[in-house]
Image (cartoon, rainbow, N blue to C red; front, side, top):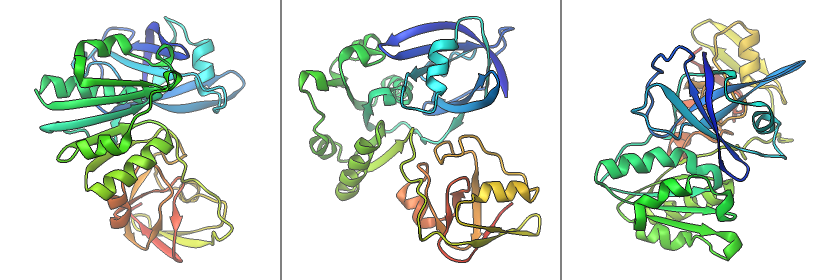
Length: 313
């Protein structure tokens, strides 16, 4: 973990707080690429700390600071409200080193789709696309202009950027966007319904799509869940995971080292190699192709379709 200081707090939009984080001594920070995120530890006096993931939305070339933007979510788990109400310039915060799950690689032609706060990981991507001279377009939807972060920073890109405000009756025409994206790579981040529809449309059209989800809609407790065994190949231990229990917790109880963070299937920290068995994937990290291959799984939320898994732990 890194201990950084809040150098500045910026109101990026209504309900969106921007934080500039820097080393208190001015040291360089670990490098990152567009699409990366960091874990932020949110301390709560007298209560366990929360860990939340926020995309880096600054300039990767600026090695002395990290920039994040936090949407206030009244119906969330309390982390965003704590940041909005209790985080000020000068405070120290603990964060992880950057991790990348988005898999951004500049291509000759790219289409970016952002819904609401999903613009945060997209912002450095379009800067990289522009710097590379790529053919690119951004489609950015939100409730109303006042709630949509980074509007002023997007203006210089001119006709590359298409903004849709639902308060003005504007909607993204996803079928048309996907039809125009033939031969391009689509990068998207936003609400689950938006990403689900994009996955369906891109799958039907054969368009390459890469997404990042902030919320995991795949975590479910099923009445048909059954107990299964997990063999830990490196330690030689075998544990039994009962319905309602997680592989991650049972692995930790067995004394095996298994890094974790969100514990909700969105951050990718607990990714583990699968040597034998068929995982029941319930994360929001792996692509459809990666789920089919089942070379890895997120052991915080996923389970086993059969009776036994062998994991590289």
